Image (cartoon, rainbow, N blue to C red):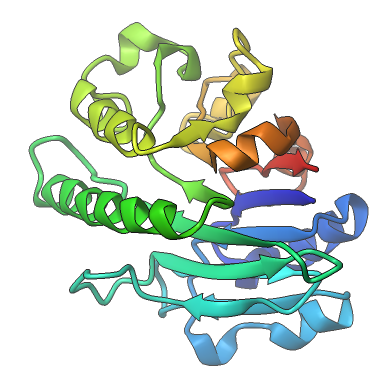
Length: 260
């Protein structure tokens, strides 16, 4: 089973790129963030024509998340449990294997950016992550096979930052954000990429504004977190930079993991 995650920064702009990538890579599941479109405009038919079912929750201009899958998804939830929040940042569903004998709970998140450490948006980010922590504690109690993916807007360590000194204490890389992420992971979620790349400094996001990709000035903020059971089944995990080199790319690129 191949699970991938990609912040596409407007599905309307990059639908053809997503369909091309699906055709080339054939993941079983692809989680998308930053759809930037309301539910009524989500292109379910285009995905179905390419062999994928889809579930989504979106809003005009901002946010939005979706899961596309080779088989129909079940028990879909589009609101972060216990959150009083209208922003479309959370979607979860059950994926059944080919024999319909095992279930993996897939959670796709678009964590708030936070803007700056002294901003109200950062307070919102911390609150949202706190609610996610509570929800994932319950999910782990109920689902041995759990994979949480998405744009976390947090680089887990200095190894995930092109220039740690330059980013020290800034949004995405602050000690406070990393502590919140570690607290979430301490529930029993594991950074799957780091199980296979202990010293790699590969990134998943590069800033448009500074032409960051050509300089490889990036951050690894798109993560695949596996429960213990799923980590035991993980066979590979990596970052595909190819779409970042396409015309009009997203500022993020896909990350993926393969499980038995």
